[in-house]
Length: 464
Image 1 (tube, helix red, strand yellow):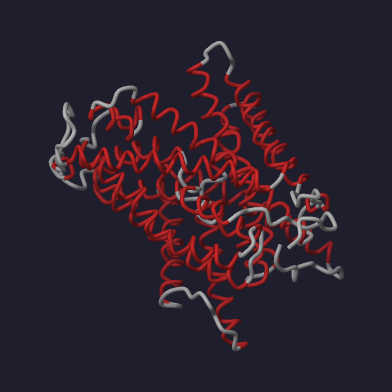
Image 2 (cartoon, one colour):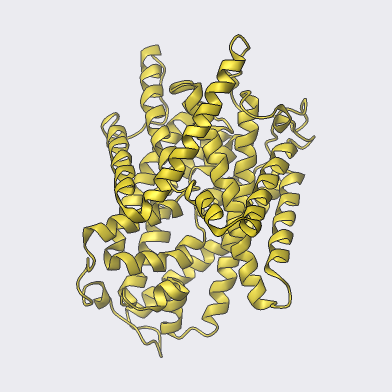
């Protein structure tokens, strides 16, 4: 596809190495480096079960999404497939909810990055850093999709090097090869009140926490639509998701719970990676982790800007968002979609500063269950699209394993998790807030649909 169009088409500037690195490390945010400490403190060494369960769910969902994306690459990804397989209301709803999720990530990650920079340069206010970081990344996203790809390539590479370095160092400490280390061996997995000290309920609660740290794996199916060979890129990314989750999450978390007692107060206070590096005796551990976390949150912010703008562009192409959001520059960048998404993020930041704390907390809670809803929609869409394709006698190139048994298992599992969230007091607000937001979006979708009756719906727009 040429990059010069009628100003309503995306470019194809993402190179193979961009999409590959995006698929390898795009999912790694501050959740792994810092947030995992809270999950370990909650569930003990049995947090490994939580990561394994959440990781298995992501692997299965990605397989289902890849089956649909390889057959019909589209920058709207699962939102477009839901539109075709379930109904217009489903595509509209999940598209807008997903856009909202990433719009809220923008100020959160910008604030996290600004907090680290403010600690280094205390004379400059946090909000100044937040503003500058957001504006710089908005600027790079406006220029050309290959700028996003290039930024993400280097951000991701630094994250991968950091995690591999941590795994090598942690493994060396386990086997007693690090001189001066205060820790070695794997006895802490069972020697502090056992493997599952707080029971199965704590593991389920930790799984809810860890599940959201995997959100973003699906971005590769959105980005692949702007590369030269979408099918090949999606196949490679999906096949690599198993070893990525195993290596980056399960192996690194195993090393943390092996080397540090789960009830060490430093884990939730300063994060799992820094705690281990301190005990091993790595000089400047805090500075090293701060730099890696800064890169990780900036990378997530970059991806949030990219993803929210592409979903808004796709919604616009289907007539479900303002028409101007589908206008693109000569380089194929949907500049209005980028600007509108950034503007919405700034409104969220503004709400954080001027509204009572409860308002922003409610906004945050409203994105709590969206990851699970996205996964549920992907599973139901794949179930229906496979049956439609089989009825037409179409050949399915890339298949979901053990269809339809595993697809149904995923659907039942997600419904069960949402039910557990509704029952648990600490997660009920997320279900209530997300539920209210979903009802509002569905109502808006039905109104839009009613107004458009008799007009072409643009639902058959394929590709990018």
